[in-house]
Image 1 (tube, rainbow, N blue to C red):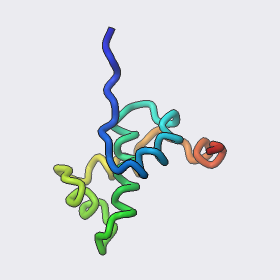
Image 2: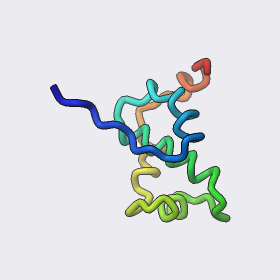
Image 3: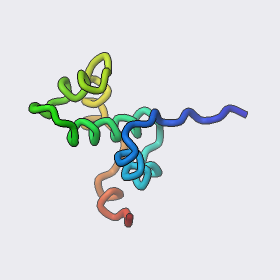
Image 4: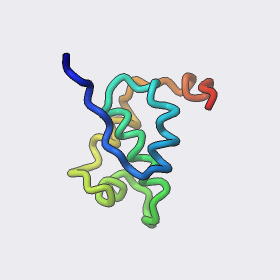
Length: 84
């Protein structure tokens, strides 16, 4: 049996918060992008652009973050209705 890939850890605060929303994402890459966006928003960088967030996180480029925001299968109504 193959063990599903786990999301890479970020900051404990972000990981704990995002864990509440993990069930809304069908794949680990989308969930990691969700966590990375949160890290970028809370970081001390001046410009909160996707390329800057990707650079701070050590990602090769911002494409994965861009796809998360524009093409992900997550549903905003599920997020709004989720009780934490």
